[in-house]
Structure formats: C-alpha cells, structure tokens
Length: 155
Length: 155
DNA sequence: AAGAATAGGTCAATGTGATTGACCTATCTC
DNA sequence: GAGATAGGTCAATCACATTGACCTATTCTT
Image (cartoon, each protein chain N blue to C red):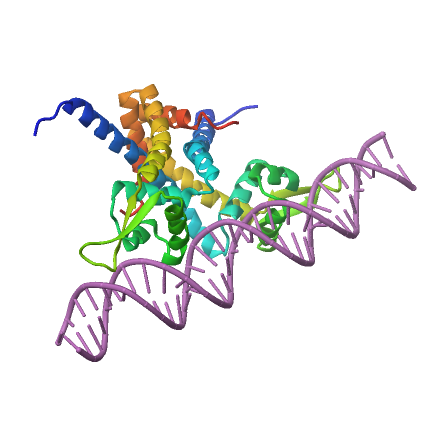
C-alpha cells in the first residue's frame, strides 16, 4: 500500500483532528465553568440571566435599567421579569436616582452581593486553578491564543 | 494615604480583573468562532442544530438516527424537524441499513459534505490561525490550560 | 408463527423565553 | 404647557424543546 505523500497526509489529519480537539475542549471548558454556578442558581429558581444581572450590577453599582438593558442586549420586557424576581428575593435594591427621578438605580443587597461573589467566585476560581497549574508563561500564552480568536468580534 | 498591604491588594485586584478578563475573552472567542458559520447557515434558513448534525454525520457517516439523537442529546421529536429540512435541501441522504431495515443510515450528500466542510473549515481555520500566530509552545499551553478547565466535565 | 421488543415517525399539548407593538405613568427639559 | 425620556405593563406571537401517546415496520425470542 504505497502512499505518495505520507508526511503531508499525516500532517493534515493530525492538524485537523487537533483543531477539532481544540474546538471540543473549548466547549467542555465552557460547560465546566458554567456548570456549578448554574446548579447554585437553580436551587433558588434562578437562571443564567439572573447571574448576568448580578454580575454587571456588582461591577457597576447604581447602574440604570436602561444601561443594564444595553449591556445585556435584551428588550426591557425580557429584563423586567428576572429583575422583579431578584428584587422579590431581596438580592437587588431599586431606588430613584438623585439626579433624575425617572431613572432607577440598581444595587445589590448584602445578600445579592454575597450570592454574586459566590457565583462569580466559583467561576474565577476555576480559571485561577487552571492558570496556577499551568504557570505564568502558559497563562500568557493562553491569553494570546484566546485573544487572537476573539479578535474578530467588534468591541 | 497609607496602605498596609499594597502588594497583596494589588495582586488581588490584578488577579481578579485578569480572571474576569479571561472569562470575558473566552466568551468573545466563542462568539467569534460561531459567528461566521451562523451567518452562512442563516442564508439557507438553517441553524446551529443543522450544523451539529452535519458535523457528526460527516465524522461518522452512516450513523443511525438513534445514535445521532444520543450524541446531540435531544429528543427524537426535536431531531426530526431539522433532519427533514436537511433532507429536503438535499444535504443529507437517508437509507435503510443493510443489517437492520428498521435503522436509517444517515449520510451526507456531496452538497452536504461541501457545506459541512465550509462551515467546520471556517471554524477550524480560526483556530489554525490563532495557533500559528502564537506558535507551537503557546498552542500546547493553550491546550493545557483549556483542558484543565474542561477537566471537571465527565467524559 | 405469535408476541414482545426496537427504530423511527408523528400528532398534540405544554412550557419557556424572547420578540414586537401599543399604551401608560412619572418626570424632565425647553 | 408641549414634547421627550425612563421605565413598566399588557398582549400577541414566534421559536424551540419537552413529555406523552400512538402508529408502522421490522427484528428477535421462544
């Protein structure tokens, strides 16, 4: 069984399966990072949307509904329900803005901040462990590759 | 403004924002890899589900509906519609299995194979470019870190 | 050969989440 | 006071997936 271009063929199939592996492992990594927070949220009847809200409000306390809506890229109708649920559960606090009473300031309550820290912390912890395990240089490389992939996205 | 533990504080905030950055850049990378194939699919009125079907059938030609269903982890009702659409568009071909006439063999048509190669190729190309840009060592590091993240997922 | 099991398809009801569109209040700006 | 703006809400609709029930064709079992 003679093969005319064994190197090229092998190189190709090796590359190909390696690239598929990259795609696959990236999916698994995503799922892994999301899995535990999702479980914690589910216990309270919450979902990823709620986490996203808590996440952004934690980083920009006092942001308005409109700002949040823009960041999350959803309609106000889609935002309204989870927002009310978070308020009902005492995780966020809505108040009128001082400069403009039409605007609502969204803030985390102590409990909301605690939950957010737990959820996000869980995720960041996984990255921290992976980075620590691989070392500083490997971490930099990871950022280089992943950043290169992300490059095409506007923003 | 005296600071008691500047190193620790800085290290923490630096780490923290770096980890958040990691999470963010990973999201963007995901979106970037998915974006172009999604656009190509949309032109034909297809979605990511259809791509997933084409992807798996390309790698395991002749697989059964049940196998596909198991791999995709959806119900047969959910699978049926996109499967029929792909057949209607002449992208897949269904035939009875030789060993068991109840079982349907799913295969890609020439056109289906061509589309699948274009879709998946587009995605793998992005990885290939990112890896080539970063070099072999960085690629290995990327796999190490991402693999470590994915570790917790069964399978 | 009869009966049970299996692969697959289909109809129906239901649920979830998001979207568009219209309309409403309160408030601010000019 | 008129018009614009932030936000809320009701309603219809859409996309998609799920469960459940039922049906055919085929294979396996005894």
